[in-house]
Image (cartoon, rainbow, N blue to C red; front, side):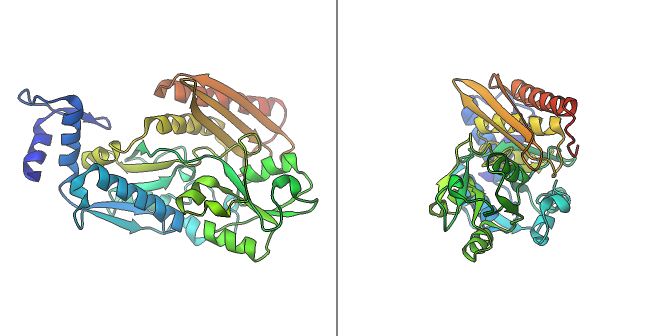
Length: 355
């Protein structure tokens, strides 16, 4: 059966992630059914290897991807059809320095990209906020899973909210975006570098290394640790990181089999939001030393965007909003225009960023 389906793939016609395949005039079936048949044939031939980091959160995201593939393609429920490959990245190896001091861009993706390109894995599962705005030549990222809650949370054993923190209280965070927005509202707080996976940070907090910390709600939810949140911060209190809460799945350019598998999982509303936010980040060309936040979402049938860039101390902050249609072209345009505006405003104002 799998061989017959694979032969059908070679003689049928559809577009899978931009790759054209010739159609036979003898094939007559509804488009959705035809696409599903082609995709099933493409994934039914050999083990599909899923690459991921080894942190508990990264593994939770890889397991989610695996389970979605199994639910979508019954062939992948068979033993050996899917394999998860753990890859240690530079960001996982160096935990005693701020990300901004060791390079920032690509720290959690480079080794996974290398494994994808040399064929050790077939698809790569990423937290989209870790993915640089450029992709390595030979790779594509056509799939985003449905986005989780984009908000941040405050966690403390002593205080119920940020507003309760006294002057001089210590907040642990490795994120310049969080630090800048926090200091803009509470300039008397002390912010210290706080790295490690979610469990490590929670343990550091319990050990009294700081009075509170900030984490992404999406990560807590995926780890079933939502109950650890002391309070959930509103978007007005803390604008999220670009692509926060979004999972992206990449494959090699030209790998029709893998592209067909992940195309079936894509959530278009999430993908368009991520495209918009990453266009904003690319236009700013911000480094790991530049606090940048951006959030795009569907609102009243349109794509609404809000973005900001700030000095690390939060004393100068530039914000803008945009609204456009839910199309790839508009998503890129409004993100790029918003980033170009804020970059120009900051330069005209004499604010020096690490661009």
